[in-house]
Image 1 (cartoon, one colour):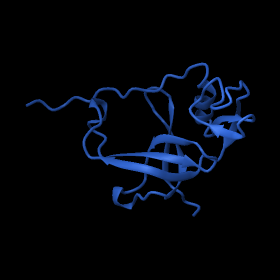
Image 2 (tube, helix red, strand yellow):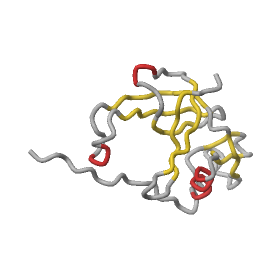
Image 3 (tube, rainbow, N blue to C red):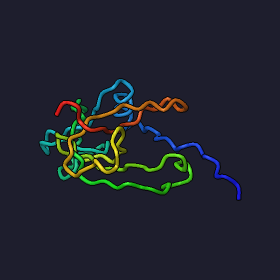
Image 4 (cartoon, rainbow, N blue to C red):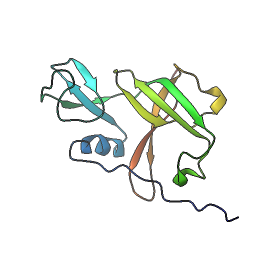
Length: 142
């Protein structure tokens, strides 16, 4: 039996709508949209505000800090490009500002992850593509 070969990991492809989010990550900042008509932050990047359908979305910097809303420990590769990256610590983080983001946890043992755990952003630059990914680790300020 042959050893599995690692495939390159797919990287996000910014669109004109999402480009400010990706540019901010490359600078070590988290930038998401805010809707004055809805009075709330929104995520994923879009052109119209949810519920109000207003075109009033503006980009604002947030702390990026939040809590683990849910998580899973993937002991098997989720796809061929991640054959050498197990376990994967996949999570949904709820930002302090409200929206949630799908991400990966780093710098933590699987047994130590808890729902409600405080986390802080990690700006992880992929050396091959140059893309900066947003990951999370336990909050070091708590």
